[in-house]
Length: 389
Image (cartoon, rainbow, N blue to C red; front, side, top):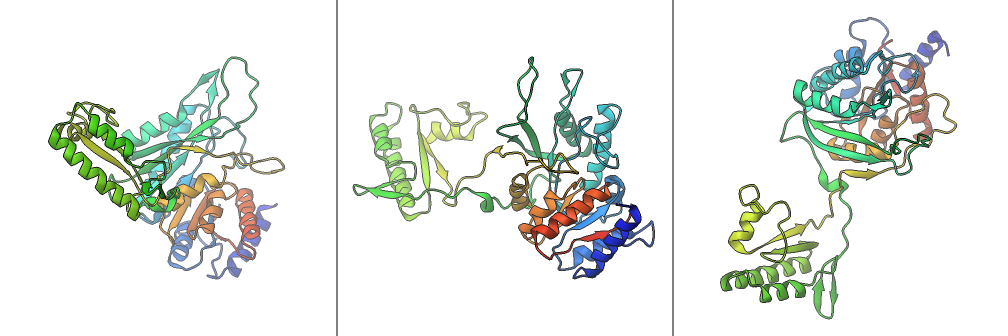
């Protein structure tokens, strides 16, 4: 598609949008800023796509305006993406440098309550695995002051065919969760909990979701050679109280750690572990399970997206990879940013979850593909395009 025809089509799509958003091609100074401000203050949840270099486009957006960023930048020296851009540098050091320039702008536009989720793959150079994800993450912490809350392992389950005979198959990639401040960032853990199993009554006794009735713990308390008489009395009373909480639904399940029977969950050192001190002083403690369900772990088993028959973009990440980060760290109605939007996976998921989204890509054809994908998924919904190349 020619550039002039693309601009014409984009302008038409913008004009038909409910907000009347147009491809603002009038000046080189403020088109991205104007388009974003109109979009962020409006009520339309159709994604906004901005075509251009990620660092330059982000530099035009207002500070503290984005709730959540979820992205997967091009991998270094892996694929020839349309219209060039990051990933085609002569050496991986320059690649990492360029990524950090983009992520510095991400930090500026991100609200103090916001989160930044980064999925990035590794590359080999002369059979040497470069550890690019770790290099990027450490520099983000050391040089830009990002706080790393989790490193999630994305297990691709099946992975790609690998014919090499001197190394194992690569079937995982990291996803880093960064925040700007240690406390006070938006985080809705309850919306992603796994639904717990319910308690039941067996022969008149309350049994937890995993079969805990208290009988085994009572026996351990009774036979303990480590607990004093007063500690045993307190342990029996505390256990009965916990079983009542299970019966009422206040607690879905629990574990009782008893001195001399089990190790503490983290460390036996009273200097480094509050649990160890509690065990020494009381003789027991409880691990309670939330009645709303268990938190997801930092190991995600998600199949990669099938790219067979895909004509334009060969490295889209799967929609399921975006769902948990967006639900966790972007409030409903908030704005999700993807500075390397490709064919719009982040935008699709954000829209389906009731969030706005801003996608940036240097390739006009990728943005056009993303717009068609949005329209196909959400029927007659139109996407908006702001700015210029």
